[in-house]
Amino acid sequence: MKALIVDGGQALRTMVGYMLDAEGFDVRHAPGTHELMGFLDKGFSPDVVVAFQSKSASDLTHLRWLKAHPAMKRVPMVMVAHKEDLERQMEWREAGVTCWLTWPITHEQLLEMVRMVVFPEKGRMSES
Image (tube, rainbow, N blue to C red; front, side, top):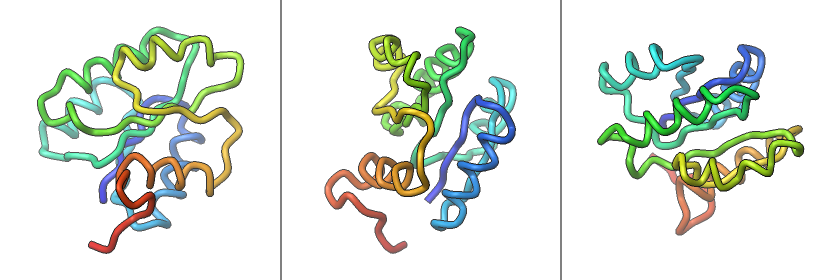
C-alpha cells in the first residue's frame, strides 16, 4: 500500500508518515506542488492521500490539482484539520477530500480512517 502526505509542516508529515510506515505503507511526503508533480511523473500512485489544513489557500489548490490528475481521480483523501477550520468542509469536499479528522489525532484514529477509505468493504487493511 502507498500513501502520500501533502502539505503541513515537516514535523506533522514525519509523525503521520511514521504511523503509516509502521503499518506497512510506502510513504512519500510532498510539501508542495513541485514535489507532487515529481512523484506522479515518476509513476508513484498512492492508495490514499493524507493532507493537512493550513491557513493558506494553497492546501486546496494542491488537492484540486491532485484530483484533476487522471491517476488520482479515485484515490481517497483524508484531511486533518483544527476544530476552528471545520467550517471549510464544503470547500474540502469540492476539492475532492473524502473525509476529515479533527486535530489532535491519535494513531488509532488515523489508521481507522485510512482503513475505512482504502478498504471500505472491509474497514481494515488487507494482506498483500
